Image 1 (cartoon, protein in one colour):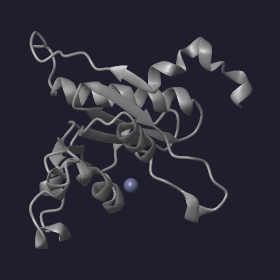
Image 2 (spheres, rainbow, N blue to C red; image 1 turned 180 degrees about the vertical axis):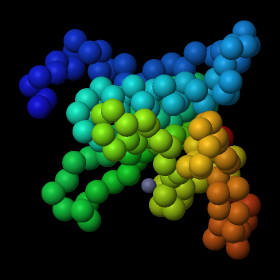
Image 3 (cartoon, rainbow, N blue to C red; image 1 turned 60 degrees about the horizontal axis):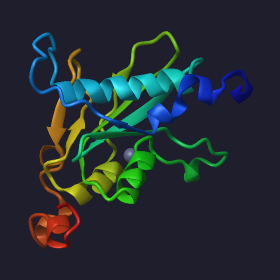
Image 4 (cartoon, rainbow, N blue to C red; image 1 turned 45 degrees about the vertical axis):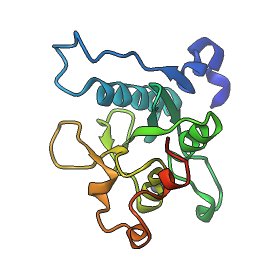
Length: 175
Ligand SMILES: [Zn+2]
C-alpha cells in the first residue's frame, strides 16, 4: 500500500507542522471561526491523504503560536496498545514546548463517507488539560456545523478541582 504513494510527491511534510495563517480579519465569507475551519481542513486533508481507501481519521491541534500539528493513530496488532489520533500531535506540542489551544479529531467510515467530528475521549481530555481548562476541543453533535467547547465545559467536575483551579499554570506548564 505504501509503495503506491511517494510521500515526497505529496508533500507529506506539510502535514506534520504548518504555520496556520492568521486570518482573523478579512474572512467575511467564512461561516465558522477561521481557526476552527483551518483545523478541520488540516485534519481532513491528512485523513484523505493517509487513508485514501476505506475508513480513517486524523487529528489536528493548534498551538499558541498558530502552528497546526497533525497526527493519526498507530496501527497495532494488540488492541491494548492502541493510541488515540491526537496523541502524536500532543507529543509534538510537548516536543516544541508550545501550549495547545485547540484540538479536533475527524473520522469517516469509508472513503466516500462524510467526515464527522469525534469529541476527545476522557483520556485525551486529561492529556489536553495540561494546557488548561480553556483549551477548545471540537465536539460530536447532531448538527452539521463545527462546534468547539472548552475543556472546562466538557468536564466541569474535573478531579483536580479538589486541589486547585489550574494545575498546569501552577506548575508553569501552560504559560
Ligand atoms: Zn483519546
